[in-house]
Image (cartoon, rainbow, N blue to C red; front, side, top):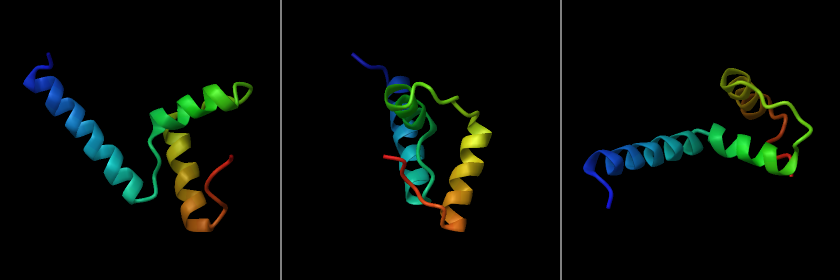
Length: 67
């Protein structure tokens, strides 16, 4: 049984993820999980590095997906 606080936290996380995806910024946690599963040899960037790379890819047209 979930508490009201857990439900609110879950809803908030979903809302933030949805807003980021609408703006073209993928979710960092999903990205890290993808790297660990499909590219274990790569270094996991910090959130700041991830955010800057995503912004550059979006606004400079350098592409989006790796796979």
